[in-house]
Length: 169
Length: 420
Ligand SMILES: Cc1cc2nc3c(=O)[nH]c(=O)nc-3n(C[C@H](O)[C@H](O)[C@H](O)COP(=O)(O)O)c2cc1C
Ligand code: SF4
Ligand code: FES
Image (tube, rainbow over all chains, first blue to last red; front, side, top):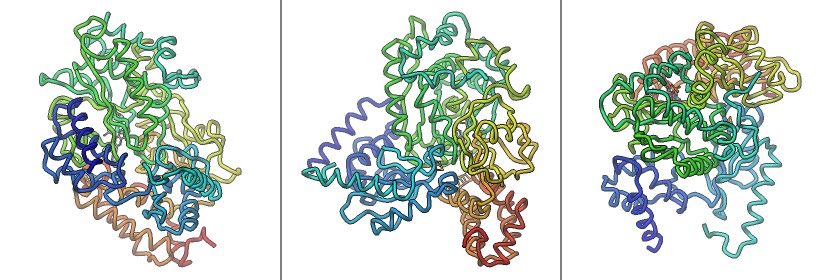
């Protein structure tokens, strides 16, 4: 509930500083706030957004579902996007995705049991000069090999486990 | 060759306003504000011959003239920084290394067309670029180049960033506008064109990042100088994103119309491990393939159109002799199936059919009839609502035609010949 109150304040702030002529344009920025601060975009989040912006809940929901980067299903603390589009594919992107999935025992789109990583097969992220590439939340990793990719994620895991409360966002 | 678009990117802290100002930044905008009327600016850009770098190649000066001529207000100026075309990463370079060139280009364009509000529609996958752009906008406001009554004039303009969220179709300008209005990114019917009825149905200019980065230098050094670079009917410098199986993948600035062969073998260092070149998609995922015999072609809008393909975003995707053409066409088709917005049937159904058929050919269970079917589906997709569906079949229909033997080999061997 506390979290919802926090969201209410954030969306109200967003609305006060709106650079748009219509409140509807704030739906995407509002959903970005939820995407960044919550494990998933839930109906109650969409309701808060709809109410404050004065739009229909369905207008928020259709945006949350249309755009690939919004998660309406629970995601891990880190979203790992492995590119398999052409340049990455030609340079081994698929084997990297496969290696990561095998290593953590998940399929593309799934989250590891410890809730740390959601592994996603991604479209081109504009990192093709360093193909094959992946991103972990906002950090980029390029010129990967399967071993390097796994080492990167293991390093994230090691650091997390060193923290007191690994699940804190 | 002298770097023009990339003139700033190799400097330390090139993204900061002090560095930009030190090397002549915002001088073009000052000149425009003090010495030129909006019509002067439009005339100069028209004379330069600059054509949009977002893919369609529309003359920028003409676009601005249309927007300037419309009486409805307010008018909006949008920078298209959605860069979603696979294997295109030139705009990212400008966004991260020379954000002030984009802002200055927008300022000049807004002044010329009478726009008062600007948005940068930035793809969601560029969070680093977002931080850099936000800082750049803040710096520009603090220097008084953005806001009300800029530098004491009666010109007011401000810029805001709108983050996309992973939808390629939002690079299409009318889908972008829908998205900016807080809707699903589905294209609108044209006409009316955005210059007359765009964002909130008001006159709206949409320009690509690279297009805008050209504007300050055109003003600074003049249309005559600019139009002497590159192809006469399509002048200026061009950024080519080269990737795939080349030794030195990267963004190369070269005169518009540089030979594809030269780009691959001289600038990008040739093919990895000195293998043989097999095929090139010269203008992104929706361009038709060129074979290794077809690469002495000029990389500009008219020359590539004549060669049966297109310049698009200038993304050169290179395949070598060990790469499977069916697999490449399949992967690009999967991209389009994923990105089809679903509004119209030819694209929504066509991309799905194509993926399913290519999948079975690649798996070794296709038939010769499948090739005919692919071409029939491709033809039907020409009737799609927007450019995505109209062009999505190009990598498929062109490879079926030019690499038919390889498709047939998959069918007769009942497996992909490139797999053990
Ligand atoms: C499916 C599709 C995707 C597009 N994606 C982009 C893009 O990512 N960036 C871009 O600048 N233009 C893109 N365009 C072209 C835009 O619709 C528009 O022509 C361009 O932004 C105009 O700017 P310009 O005249 O400066 O090139 C796309 C077009 C289509 C049909
Ligand atoms: S062609 Fe594809 S992307 Fe374009 S409107 Fe139709 S379904 Fe949407
Ligand atoms: S193809 Fe993978 S980042 Fe572009």
